Image 1 (spheres, rainbow, N blue to C red):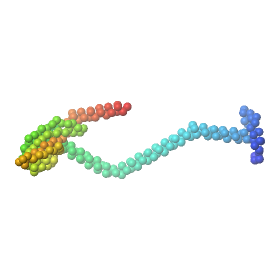
Image 2: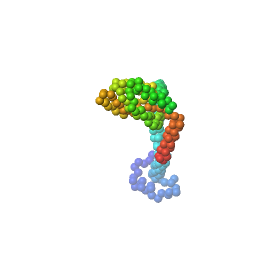
Image 3: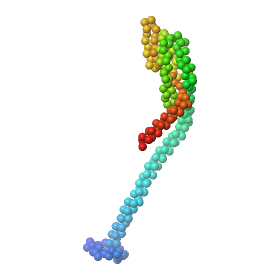
Image 4: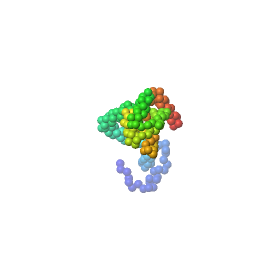
Length: 223
């Protein structure tokens, strides 16, 4: 049955008068339609507040997680594509480390190394006025042994002596160079020859303990 579309405002208002809240089935059409629309709106509002809004937030989190996983996947794909280059680079680094370790004598070989430095100067006809090794300075993976030295001789021989030291199979560097020429033309060179050696097992253990203690202290301070 079609509704009468010409219902006046007065008739609609009249339908809302004297309603019995305990018997909604007896209400006229207009109140029942209005109440149904209000109930539907309340249900939708409560559903959004307590259910769909959480689902929307979860959907946003899943989308963000999907984007993160996609980026991680792309990174992994790039790493796989460069795997051969990374393997070759790793092998090259290991080769260089092995070479550096081979160039570092242990503590029992240090006397021979210092003797090689001395012999290099004597072989060039230089006079040693000072050759004094200093106490070792322990670093993370090696030890430094500075040697204060002073040699005199001809300019050419002093230059060749520095070249000979640089060409030694063990690592020795020259620093703090100070040169002067006497009245007779003799060159005097003062320098610090820095020799390097590998750490002994007890020194390595001490370094590992110091690193662990420092990490533990830093972790405790971060709390």
